[in-house]
Length: 328
Image 1 (tube, rainbow, N blue to C red):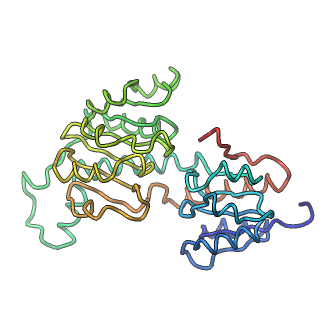
Image 2: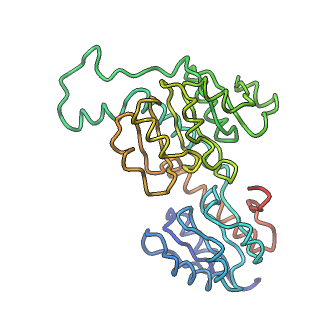
Image 3: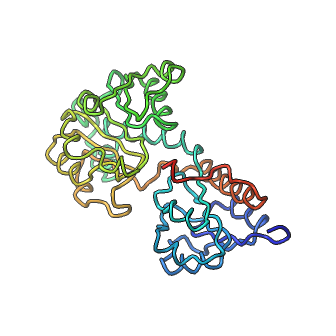
């Protein structure tokens, strides 16, 4: 494609610095507003683009890819997760897929700790009292929560984000435990002072806080199902900043309503934007609108990854963050 700029279509608004650099490098079509593209708009975009830049809100399934035509050669996803894209079908059609891994580790780990503190220290309840202007003053027994120090934290998924959570939790005085597909080698495990559990069931039953940090794959769908949730101590708290599909949301809601689990902090949901309305009614639940990666620094770094992937592809090389089906 030498001598001619790639045609790049972006499905959502990106940070201004990223959009500016894209316009310098490519023949780019930016989204004028920040609403998701409809299915018909996505089909049309794939028909006129050499490169499509979607986000996790765009579902690029086999049916959509079947209408892509022959021009589209790269889907440069603006996001680390690619469960919104049928990667296998894309590769069968000769379309490469890239993502933006690694840049949101610290931001997501920060938000995980924020949710732990919010639930255990009842921060949203305290904010609600002040916002309603009905505070009667300090009381020895008002809004009592619990301290994190000394609690057992179980991390489900000890990848980059899980390890970052472990480092933060250790600084708070928590005891770190984890379950992973593979045990970390000693060089990683020992500095974290983390205890490995081969049995997820046994770990869950003994933890005070459970942090979900694994990706959504066919093998992790409803990994925390009703049976496993019932193994948790009634005083335990669950935090999810990874993927909503890992947890059976209806089962979790029932147990929270029945006080069979003490609390939950959720940044992701099983059905995307559709949140179980009964969750909103509970005082022991903190709900956030998928804010785990919402920092200026993180979102710009995601854009820089997208730019590098596209530019490398344009230069005739393999994008550094190429996703292949065997990775999933």
